[in-house]
Image (tube, rainbow, N blue to C red):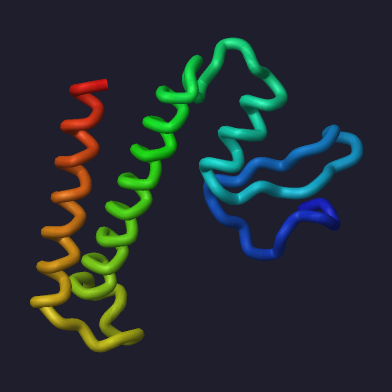
Length: 114
């Protein structure tokens, strides 16, 4: 049975903070979860040991976030699951797919460099 503070609609990722016997709030986004864990357990450093590495990590997360946004557009415009919910356009789906691949290519190039 969910705790009283547990949200009715569960999302993933999700991290419950606080002691098990006294559950606290929930964190629903990957970056705040990472930052919370880094604050709680600073060794080993997951974000990067220098300001430059931390900035690079945040930049790559931004690129990945944009890629997933384009993936969402592609899925909504190309999958039967969404037909009852919205009008679909193949050209929009293709733009979403193309933009997602560009972001993933950028992410791959940046990962190879760093």
